Image (cartoon, rainbow, N blue to C red; front, side, top):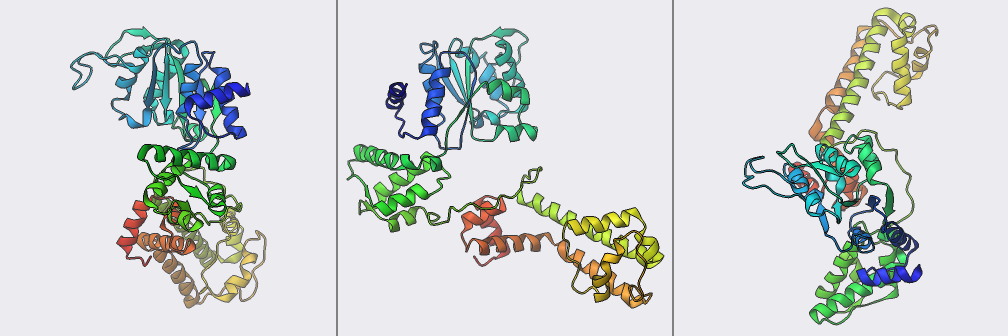
Length: 430
C-alpha cells in the first residue's frame, strides 16, 4: 500500500509524508472502486481539489467524464440551471434548451467544490439525485435519470451549518458516506521544508531564477507559523521571495517581512465558549450587548421603584424581584460607583426573601431616591451611544494587538477593509 500511495503522490504532484496526509490518500484509494459518495473537508488552501481526481482515476468510471463545479462561484439564480439544465423559455434569456452538469457527466464523476454554499432549494434537488438518480430540468416536468458518482468538498464545519439551518441534515449524511479529512499545514510541520523546496524549484524552472536557500532559523520560523492560508499561502510567500529578494539566501529578517505575525506565540489559549447565535456583522453584536444592558437597567429601575413604594420587606418577598437580583449576581454586574454606600453594603439583605429590614438601610428622603434613579438613567443613556461603544471596542482591539490591524479585525469579527473604514470614520489614532 505504501508503494501505491507514493505512486499517487507522484502522479498528482503531492508533496509530504505526514500521517494525516497519507491516511487521506489511503482512504481515497480504498473508496475509489466503489460508488459511495465522499465528502472531503479541510481548511481553504489544503489541496482538497486533488482528492476527487484521485478517486475518479482509480475508479471504474475513469474513462468517463470528470466535471468539477465550484458551487460558491455560481450565482444563486442560475445554479439550478447549471447543475440540472433548463428548457427553452424557462426564464429570461433561455433561448435554447441546455444540458446540466449532472446530465453531461452521466456514467462519470462530478466534483461539487464548496458544496455548503448551495442554496437550500438546490440542496433538495441534489438530495433527489443522490437518492434516486433522478432530476428535472428547470422549466420542465419530465423526470430524467443520471448515473453519476458525487464527490463533494467544503472548508466550513457542515455540522455547524446543519445546526444553524443553512445545510440540510439528510443531505449531509447522504454526502458524508465516506469522509476524508485533509490536515491543515500547521499539522504537517515536517512537510514544510519539502514544500518550500518544491515551490522554489518550480519558479526557478519557470523563470530561470537562482534557487532559494534558507537558514535553519528561518526554516524553524516557517515550521512554527500557523499558516491560516495553508499550502496556497506558503506557495505565494515562496514565489514572492524568489521574485522580490535579490539575496537568494532567506534569513529570519526576510521571513518577517512577508509574515509579520510569524513571532506571535503559539501557546494554547483558553477557549471561549461561542455563542449559539451567529452574528452577520459587528453591528449586530453591539446591538445585542446594548439591549442586554438596557434590560438590566430596566430591571434595576423597576426594583428600586418597588422598594421606594412598598418598602424592603414587601418588595423582597416578590419572586420577580428575587429573580432580578439572582440574574444580576450571576452576571457579576457592577452597580454604579455613585450609588450610596449603604445600598452597596446592605444589598445582600434584599436578595433574601424573608430578610427583615435593617435600620438605615433605606430612607424616605426624596433626595436619596432621586439620586439613585438619576445615576441609573445616566448610565443607560451613556451606554446607548452605538458610535461611542463601537469606537471604544475598536480602540481596545487595536491596543490589545499593538496596532496590528489584521489581528484586531479578526478579534472583532470583521474584515480588514471594514476596520480600515471604521478607523477613518471615527478618526482613531492607529
